[in-house]
Length: 178
Image: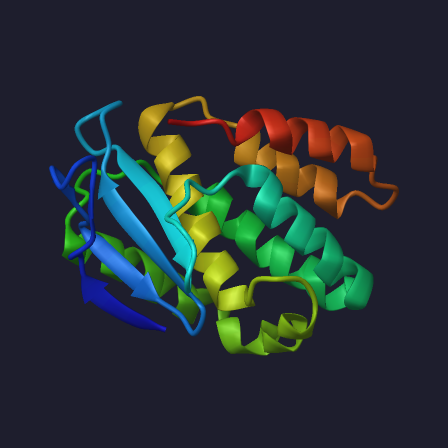
């Protein structure tokens, strides 16, 4: 992954990305949001496609595919992400340096490379997913002190006898944002 200062423009070229995370096939963009002073808006783009707002359902389906391929490793990965969620605090600054440090420190803390075998399953690689989920978690907690949706979905995914319909329903509802 390469981390770059934001250059992507959206909203008729009136809003410039703060930071961009460049992967082999995807780019994640982070923009200033409108819900609070330190709100962030996350967008991503796959090579050759339009820029999109990620929904919870996208990463949930991908994680379920990874769980089908290697459940033990996928659950370890999810527990590491859950730990990130539990330790995540609202942003007090959404600058390039702050967001870069958030992702780099988090990747070092969870030792992302140990999960690379999961890249054989699903659409997204685990590093892309980690960055996306860390950003979604901090976005959620920055805008709502009592946020729970992200954490709830991870808990449901980690249950021994998962209720796929409950997970999909929660993820489909929880991911809606401008």
